Amino acid sequence: MDQLSGKRAIVTGAASGIGRASALLFAREGARVVAVDIGERVAATVEAITQEGGRAVAVQCDASSESAVRQFVERCVREFGGVDVLFANAGVTGHNGKLEEQTLAVWNLVLGVNLVGTFLAVREVLPHMKSQGKGSIVCTASVAGLRANAGPVAYSASKAGVISLVQTIANELYGSGVRINSVSPGLIETGMTEPLFSAARARGSESKIGQLNPLTRYGQPEEIARAALFLASDASSYVNGHNCVVDGGLSSSLPFAPSRRGY
Image (cartoon, rainbow, N blue to C red; front, side):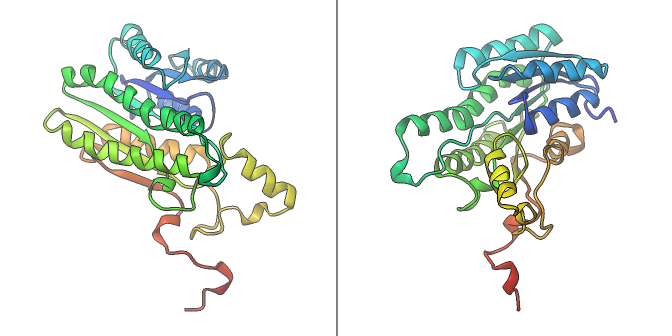
């Protein structure tokens, strides 16, 4: 407990899924939280935190808007006196269709939220963290950014960009005391993946979801939140420029047919 005691944290995408689970966990571990999301349910996340005795404020805005990002970082500094942790988690999936079916509008939306929004949030917190000589930034990437067939093409490209962004910024921050890492979830049950889960349940094949990883199951938002907590906390004080994969072992393997593993 109290792994983030006294810390000031910003969590984007905090209305649901991984962001909500992380905002709740960060608050339980002692952080004061600015919960950010474009959806109005971010207020419910903050209400849940305050009901548990934590401190949090809700900001409803577009995480890909330069002015909005600047405002929620300023809100954290004004409300809590600074910023120690950023979890840049907001993301969208976009279109599942083939590349030739993709529109420029979809690509701009997906890369705007997932990659540009991450860049903006990191850029805005850095002056505050560098001035205090410490801070931890965590960005949500994905196994889809590591290899093909784990997500739509625009989504996958955006998450590969996040991983590269983290590695590059870690080295740009040489000697600053500020750390930056990413977490790459596998298949997690969230609002974003709800269509997949609903379709499988309608077919009666829910038991097959996640069968390609060695744990033979899908994950829950809380399991990613615990990884984000580790990276945000001083427990990971020597972890920097790292992409932490939380996927049940999916990315450890080459493709195979589960029923024919006869080697």
